[in-house]
Length: 485
Image (tube, rainbow, N blue to C red; front, side):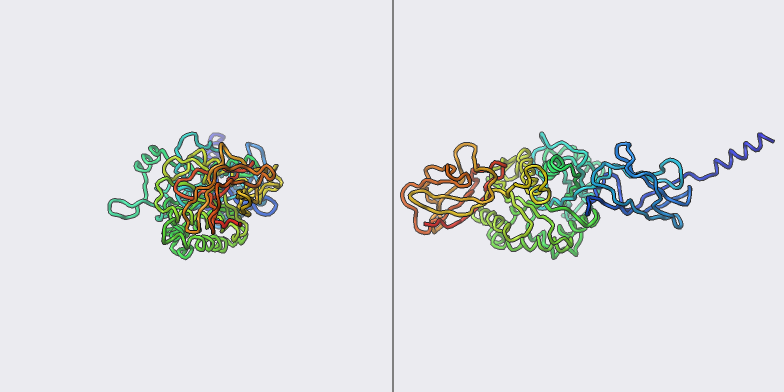
């Protein structure tokens, strides 16, 4: 009899269904959640459950330490459930464990971060075409929402257009149809690429080092694209347009971000588009803020740099100066120059100076968002031309926004004087920082200035420019600015 009872009990135990819990939406491994007021985030998740008790419980751990202990979050209805992890503090990586009733965890979501989301958008210099040599190492507190709509640890290259979810990013095949790579072709593409370093990862790693706040990057850039291709009016085309794709992905990531990083303008440096660039750019920023329902979201961008094969020099300079001027018209914006950076090919900023641009953008972000970080509260945007005047054989160029003092590696280079017809006038024989004012440059002139003379910096084809301030914020390309005489 005892043997039979034991056998029956054994069969009953075998008949108890295993506890199965699935998370179907709301959170996935490696996801970064935008923190809200108080530096916390609440994570709404949904799923299915089979077997186990009636109540669904959750707990949160960080490196095996319990941050939030087991507590009920949902009561399943017909095998489905929805619940919320409330007020998860800034930090991570977190592990969210789920169980139905008491017992061991039956499901988990790993490497969750709570921090700041940043959009990466624009064209190739944001996409990243730097050599994949000595790239920025990954950091466990920096994750990337890849173009395949997958959250991963952020590693170079951040952008992989070939397997993006949205067709606007795909290359065209032999039949001139957009085609997404997968399988062996995708693996071969990834294994053999030698280019792809960008500024997004260096920016994020620098921000983590300064603030300790985790970063989620939303990679949305696409090389060779113009302002017309980023037109907000194309939003309704969804993944068939750059703007629509970006908005869709931002909504997938939660719909709120800490800021936007932008690097674009090279494709608009032509006779048709350059005169309209500033207006289109300012409208783009306004539309993006409206669609995000974040009218004050910070927008930081890079002024386009050098192009050694440039055939539209005047239009290139026009776009650069439009970017400089737009900074004054766009609230909560900031620009960093790239004119003093080295290239890894004829037009793309090199890997090491992409790191430099990332740090410059971090300077702006910390200045505006983290004034309590050491040095951030007193950080200025960087040198901006303030006045240009001529007296007794010397043109004095005064700058606002200088951190400390102006300086250069070697003799000061990049300034040029032009006549009223735009032609350069070779009259500068010496340049130096003003001994009486470290935020001004003195340009010594041979002979007399022509009537209607103007000053430029970074003018012409592939100029060499080397003036920066003590925070490594460079003087931007500017001009023409009239010289007061």
